[in-house]
Length: 351
Image (cartoon, rainbow, N blue to C red):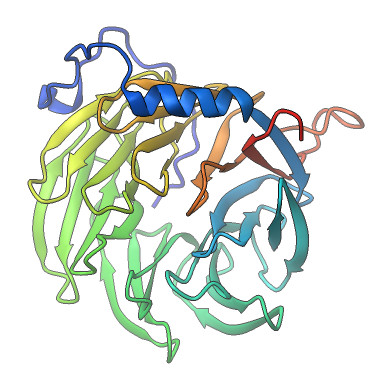
């Protein structure tokens, strides 16, 4: 399970969508009311602020379900948690214990106090922000790079570099099932109904398994090259995938057909996030901007400028605030030193 970070070069011009399956190039008749309204909002809230989180690059950011806290995981082997106070992030704690890079983390879907981290040290750790301690360390077989929590809160799935996905009982902290795949597994996710499990793979496919049986349901040829990331929209209507072909494709959850593509990025799409209302999709890559699209039309709604490649993006679960982290260098003192900051876009310009 290779971590999808290697640059693959700008996308070819004149590229068609995933298998040219979708009416994604249909021309819309001017921006929608929603786009105009959000653009108006962002004109007054286009400020990005950065907050020191780590001593090395940040690989993952995620919001708690109530939106009060933002967690980040870093190459420096720690996780940090911030409280969102008015228009800034205030660092609450730094969580130590992992022996290697924290590559991904996620929060419990309904308990705003619990989050879990996946590390290259062959463990996952569950943390409780009320005690600031690790409440469980679960040993796994390989170097972990992907993690997700099931929508019902009962199971944590973790994927490692050897393409093994382990399903861990969130209460007993014991492994319930383990699947070895014959292809490169990238990002993993349950659907919102908790009855299917999705994987993106190195052959450009989306593999769907029934859950909890883990029987193959379908394999979709989604992209002509490596399919890197996947996200489900909070409304349960769509999911989106990002690929090394620099395209983001939007899929109808029920029909499992591609309904739209977004093609404004030039580099492999590393990270995706739907806004809380399911109407905006942020996507990012090594391009020096984050694309924000209207989901229903694919129209460009905004772009957030960055100075370097973006590793991770996450919309706030209740507000139009976007957390993200880039491969920034701390130029003030040492141009090779990683900055270790998390950023917040969508703040009032006068804040």
